[in-house]
Length: 575
Image 1 (cartoon, helix red, strand yellow):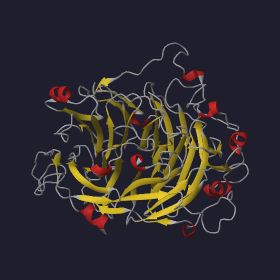
Image 2 (tube, one colour):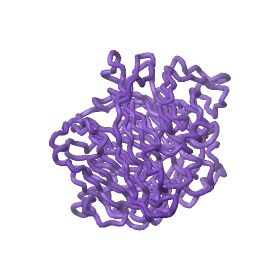
Image 3 (cartoon, helix red, strand yellow):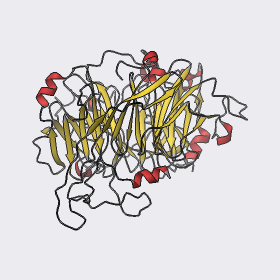
Image 4 (tube, helix red, strand yellow):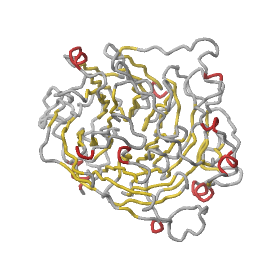
């Protein structure tokens, strides 16, 4: 009921109350659309407490929802029970990074376990059926192989050098030296763009002054809301006033990512996925941009999640709403995609995972570099593991999948307790995966043992985002946070001691689906309603916890001063 009421209540930062969203009064007379501005508040006496102390709300930024473009179809009814269509949106999503050059950092140690692979199906087997008749994801759950101890290197056949292999390594057709210098695709200035895709770009009227005054090592943010993308200087006293704001015509940005490898005080490589399937690379300092998968040339479905490949300056992975995972190169031109018939060795166990183009293909002059059919429904999220080799993928087909994306092998496919998965995250050491779903539950998975080790109850509606707090994780305990459509922020702690062996499990090597009653149930250590609108994201920083909601509220919860962590498992200064 809480979620329904919040959706039915119009936002004060949307549009004038005497007009509809298309700039006409209720009587029908024309009225200019008024675009409201972002606001910044510093509330007093708003906080929540956890075991380590009190988190205080210091900044509350409300991003104005941009008015729809006149060419957009009317969408007025916000009732979630209505049958009328509504604009595609992902709420508010924000990425926060320091602009200082990333120092050399080996990162957290790789997990001390190996994972056996499930053989992918041939490109023609879209239903996941194999020659042995094994077709369902449940077969993969009941038949996965666990490799432990000294048997790892012998059984898996992988050496240390192979484990460190990068995606596409060894393919000469991907080398810049192959066939002469690599031809880079042309870029344009987004401020001067005459593209019908970009409605307009608004640069702050004191842009040069603000750029001269800003800290070169300071924290910046890229945030998308509705059909807008904004670049914020989080160190500024007027941080709510964007340095640059881009409005798109009909497409809504649903996801974005900043490349940690190439970021510097004068460069940010931002990749953005849209509801139309288009992808834009954008560099805010220079205002340069390129458009990839233009008009859905390669895939016409919405981009639901996007991320740069680990340790790559130009390759990124995009998840599309049709269940596809596609690797693009921002420097390459696009061409219409034609599936390639590719066979891969593997065992006889099959599930829904089809390689329509492999990164080992010699045809790498244009995008895509690889193309996988992963799920039978929309992919709702994916995250790379700390070992930079595995990928956790969740989707609306009610499955969590772990993929060795370097080897292009499916490792695990496990069903949810009920409903779709909505979000996923890895622990900083790679030992655990957490997922949230439409069953209002948070599930903790052991990546090493391929099984559920705990379920977490506390949300009263769908879980919309999960994230580990690397500043409060160590070798003994783990901290993670979740947010949901119930407007609540929850914090959770667990340790290996708390994750007892499931009831009825006799053999340590026995694997299989776990019932809800067979695993521990953990309560949250903190639960608080922190907004009036459904929440869409949680971000952990060394100095704060940041939450975002669907209607544009970004809140900065400062950590307790007396217990602010200085180091953490896999943590870096600032992020």
